[in-house]
Image (cartoon, rainbow, N blue to C red; front, side):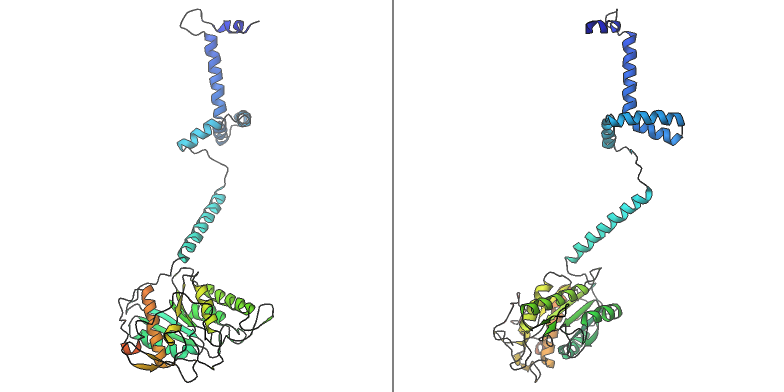
Length: 369
């Protein structure tokens, strides 16, 4: 039997018309196709009504349709039109996913914020900034001078917190990182910290494994860098609203037996570069000559000469501390709007305009102790 004979029952005897049998076949095929394409939707509607036998039929149709991917085209069309296809995801799962997305976004926002210097609200006499200054014994005179300088602006309050013979080398004697996170940050709550260590750190150290490290050795420098970096990270504010000015130590006079200040300055500077919440301040040029060598006396902006260091050639004199303090305030003014206050250093207390911070700190300084 040829294929033409099979089509005879569907041939119309009247030209231009379609036989009833063919119409019936087309309708059945169309309905079957529609059922296949809408199998998943039919099953959902049936489940929602709770019809037992309909559920069974719909389930069979849906299984066959899914197996042969008949619903693929309908699903793509519905997705393009934005129609809700529904799912079996529980509401609690949706909450969990949303919380994860929110946490990821917050982490991204925090990361982006940490790439920029902290935002400190502009102070006024009614809403002053609180500044904490501390460190080893060098910050005793420096801190007192900075407090006096800040008080002239009318927009600062301050706390001085120095501890003699301390630093980062001997946490068993005085643990600065612990003091900062347990006492200073939660209790004093400063918006700005000014700190300096180094004068007591030129000594042998013990690492976390109890190994002795010889001062200035590569292992010693690596361990000291680790301590500086870790302390800097502790000072980071989660809301990026706290600024730390970390001072590099100044050059020391000949015969003081205080060594390695240039190496410590380099470590602090290089670690601060990758942490916008830490701003390095270079004390070295303000307490040295034109060749960046230790200088006992220096010239101020008005041409007057002043002794910059105490007799031990380590600590600053009041005059030396004043010129460094005004320079620190100048750096703060580039990061915080101090227009509501008065920033007017007397020329006799200010270094000449030719004395500026270095743009790069070398690993070592020729002639440094």
